Length: 212
Image (cartoon, rainbow, N blue to C red):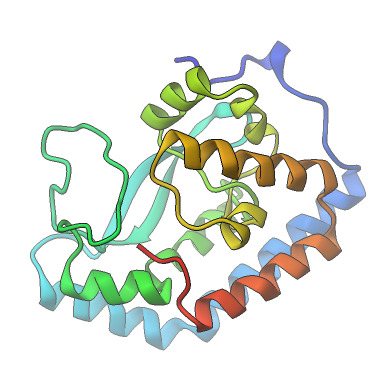
């Protein structure tokens, strides 16, 4: 499909190997600490999800990662089971009827995102980077938006410059605006920049801004 980048088309390394090693170290420290510190919350969340609605505790979904390669993202299930029965990818919107009672709380508190720390430890994602999109959306957006696939020059992230500066997007125009922030991050990424984004993310989570 069009979102995949063939080896010969891959972009040169964005940062030095030292910078990449430092970023990987930060990923391991932050994600590992998150899973350890929130272990009681994660266990309680799993139990509540199971009691609240039928279906699995975790939700796996294919997303597009580094160099356009697909991987399986892990999140707490916040929607009803079979939320997309016809198999068609649908953007989550404000007041989405598919979100469960518990799921609404999880989304506002961003708790549903925490299991992605496992993706980070596995190396599929970085803690900071562009949000990974689904293959169907990438195919569509790469046709509509110039340079959209440039976001795949780096690993996708749980949080990122676009996420803290632009509200949740559910349209092509939103994706076009968020891309500006993603490209700025790719061009200027550094350990200090990542730390600034992480601290800003903590603020946003505490005040439950921009959730769907």
